[in-house]
Image (cartoon, rainbow, N blue to C red; front, side, top):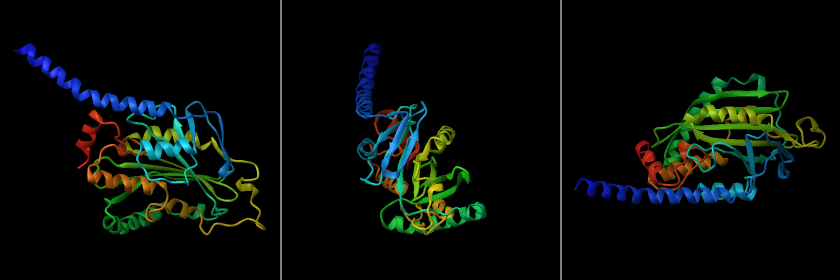
Length: 297
């Protein structure tokens, strides 16, 4: 009887494990179908380029959108130019993360206000704006989101014309907080935007990766910040503070689409939708779904 019971338990475990293993295999096959590039990578739409070290690879627009839309279930977004992907962990791994590349051609962003920004005051304003926008989120059928604070306080390098910061966010229905890490590289006619979303538990590896990536992203000669010509070039209607503050409260930009979409899908209990990172990503069934069910209510 005991031997029979053990056999039945083993058969049940195999039956439960097979769908998860099949789905993991599907994820690995999907990733294997992507065309990764390494080393020097051009982003012609932005007049920029990456000089990637061995820790990173790059997906051009078509494959980046496949990951976002087919693998991670996000809405179509033609503004996506590419995706920087760490070599480890693998894109199909549970703790994977990636950096979505976009570009704004709003014009030359003056950095004259950079040294005058009170980041504590800016944070308080953003927190209030986020709370105020929650009513509209609920009316639209989405869960609420709260800006907990800076996960990494904003820093602007006036020499390299690069700005980076990270926000800690709490989505309704999720026990784990979400990390939104941003880099902006200022150029002559606009700025390059590098955006990563992950779980707060992955702050260490994401922060280290983004710090490495800072030095790998540059504008091409003629498109650099120093190439600005006041007699001919358009000037953006905002400064550095607006780059940090914009997007979340106004529900603009890729992160808003990812975060709000996922918040809604979690609320509805749908399976198989993911975003950039373990906190907002559970795609391929099995134990991963069980872990999600234990943290999302």
